[in-house]
Length: 109
Image (tube, rainbow, N blue to C red):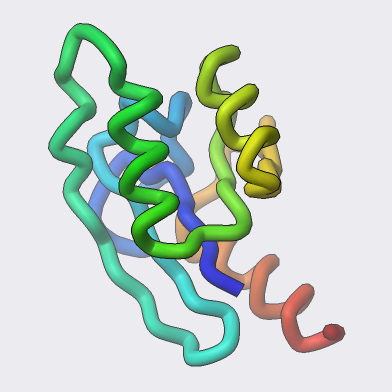
């Protein structure tokens, strides 16, 4: 499964970002291969259509799960329409902690 994680930075110590579309980084993680990529979000400072732009990136990378602290209403609707799952974590977790949770979950599948 390909996962996109909203990140405040470009390493595993970075915190899960507040809002996916505005996050400075997006971590792409493949639960099958273990591949991990920290992707600088080129749309984080745009004024309009940020959710739509990041959605196109998610679609192009075949993401099936998005993890963030929250997402905008429009992006949520677009994710739902494309059957991309959304996990909202309210805790202040690091990317490393999120990856550990994903590792435990994917090893049970």
